[in-house]
Image (cartoon, rainbow, N blue to C red; front, side):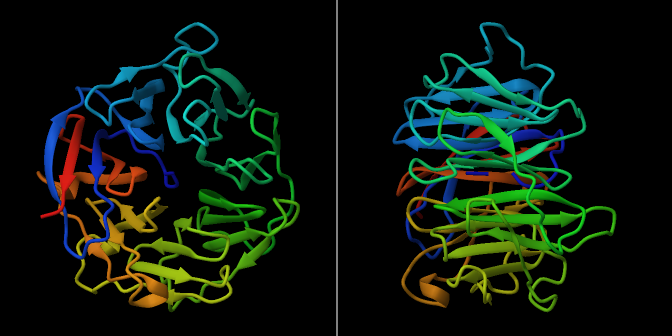
Length: 349
């Protein structure tokens, strides 16, 4: 799953999270990943196998749960990614992954990272794809979103990408930050450009043929919506600075998630994730990382949000994405201005 927010060239951190249904923060310890690694996206398609992408064409793969990593940087047989900053990755299977980046880049690997092929590069060098999400079954197979109201659709896995030119009513000029996909239902979070347009969500119920504006009252999201994630076509979370909202009606109505007002990082949220154990995650700058576990209690069956305390100077962290290998093993990526790249293993206290 995670981008979705403007990429800032900070030095990163990579975190393993335990996604068990817990009501207290996790305990963390750091393992070395290597200096100069700047990850921005992560996808774990099966237990033990994860892919991480990042700045400067970074592509890493682990097949042993993160104990060791291999760097993969070949496209069409040559190291051609150094000038690209990769922003997101989605792996519908253990072999097939799609990667987005700046300069309008979309990559595909059909063989688990042994080879990569360029699927799309726009002539507009200013275009950045911020997020990509795929599904094994359903049409469309993948959706990629980016700046300047950009939406690209992959109708079938390993097919051609096409620009979605359907009108997005009411949203105005916007940068599309995150996307969620279930069947033919597409949710996209939008950030207005230069004070123009409406911060909010756009939704398609027909695979991108047409879109609707999802209005969220300013009283619920006073600083706008920047992240969206879904567990189904109707059960979704949307967040932004100081705001975490849940819907079980496909966006028709929203209620605040059970997040204590004094929760660390609540005011810095920029993105959202949905993991395989049924949990939602809200994350962002200044080390903001909050799990909203599925406990069959609280709002819509989700327990109170649990802020995670990361070791070190957490105010310099900007958490960027979360993906799960299994119920109790997840991976999230984040940046730091001052700390070298790390892997953080977590456990329940």
